[in-house]
Image (cartoon, rainbow, N blue to C red; front, side, top):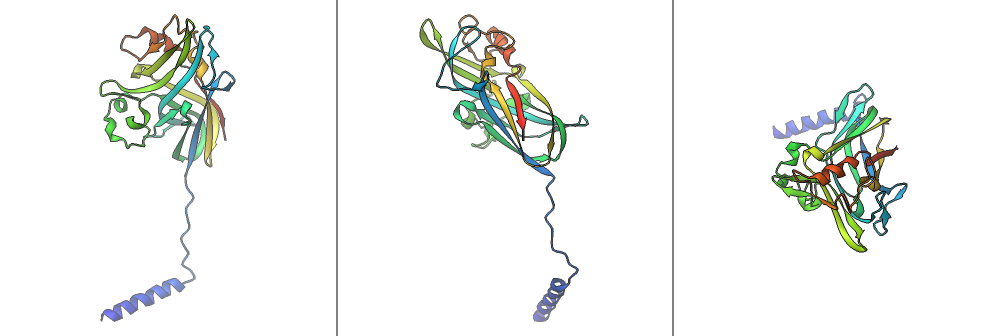
Length: 250
């Protein structure tokens, strides 16, 4: 009886296999693509070099050592004005160490008119348990070394280096943190996601010291870690707008 059942099953399989009307499965085209975000560090119109010194608009001679960023809340805007958030995507950049790109997968195809992201994190993520992230995740404190602890949350932006103070080398250090110092950067440009795309951004390091105001390390202060009461950071943060520029989409 068992052999008869097996033979019957094989006969049915053979009939189906030989049926010319049975179409082979066809791979369905994907409705999503990947986008790569590439960030290139600039000082004015030239690529930034950590091996050379620059003179700011305030007259400080400076040299950069660290430029680090945490980005989140990536959002596309459709041509009809509908916002399309890309949830659970975070980027850690360390531009002076060559960590300058992030790949975002599963971006829906379509036509769009703007792109935006947040420098920093919303309150829920900023004060969440940092041990939830894998060691190689952008939010892992072991990877980014930008976590203060349970109360403080994360540092969003690190700007560190050296400057000449009375003829001697001294350090400067600005750690932008706390939700009030977070910023959203929006870039208006028409583009289609019809294939994998590459977004290239310029990051203007010079604007930290010369933008809305000319910030002087000697007179305004060379150090701030975003205290609850922090007049140095309150002044320094005025120059944050315009740090990023969307250069091209290809």
